[in-house]
Image (cartoon, rainbow, N blue to C red):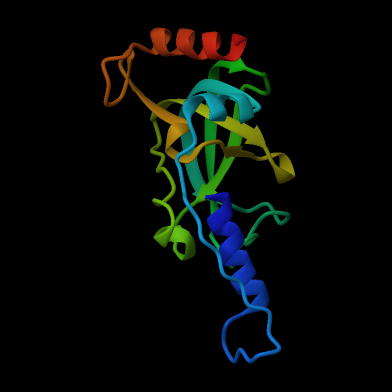
Length: 169
């Protein structure tokens, strides 16, 4: 994904319309691979279990409209934290996410969606303006249904234990 975003940025920076022989041309051959859970666990600054309390428009002036050329960072997701697995922070965090991922959608799936009341296990890292960003796209957000990770038979406590073992090395 980083390579694809870099390609989009290069195309936006250098442009393609009206190109002539003096223009810089970029040719890229890319192989994409999904990052692993272990890579995302190590890269994330915080791992938490929490509940989505609210979803709204992003209003902080430092981040509103950032990176609109490649994707839209315009949703604020408020998450109350019930448990820290890695790192620690306030009892509530504000996560920013993409409402609609249009330009890079040909390179990656749309951003994971959140729902008010959703229980989740989340990998994240601090970002500008006191916000957090999700780590690992779909391998960084796990919905909790009852005492299991949605779409699996894995109990939350078992998954947390596996995460703690991976982090311990």
